[in-house]
Length: 155
Image (cartoon, rainbow, N blue to C red):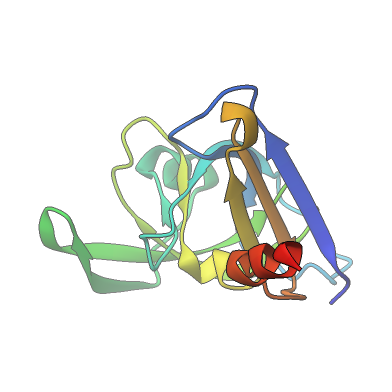
């Protein structure tokens, strides 16, 4: 996979990391068949979530059908979640085809990007000058080690 990245900069410190991303019903990206509509949604990045989540209104809009049901563990306890397959399109042009997501109530947002996607690349958040910067690249290419960086600057 070719290295690809994007950066989202805010002029102030933010507590929610959001991006506009694309989502569609699943299809083979390399196929010559007609591609379904890509629906633009607001997604938040959540390193505390093991699985990405999709809101019911997006499920309905895309006409998705559940492929499975699993137990999910939330701050409010265990609940049954339906599993769906979707294609996900990040701002850096990387697409995840036939990706498993679960349904959930994410309080006015469309999607939650969990560690199942974040774990494919390198993810950083900085707050220099009281402004938040999120950067993501895929695939992972190197370690970010602040301790090593500080120690090398002391020399």
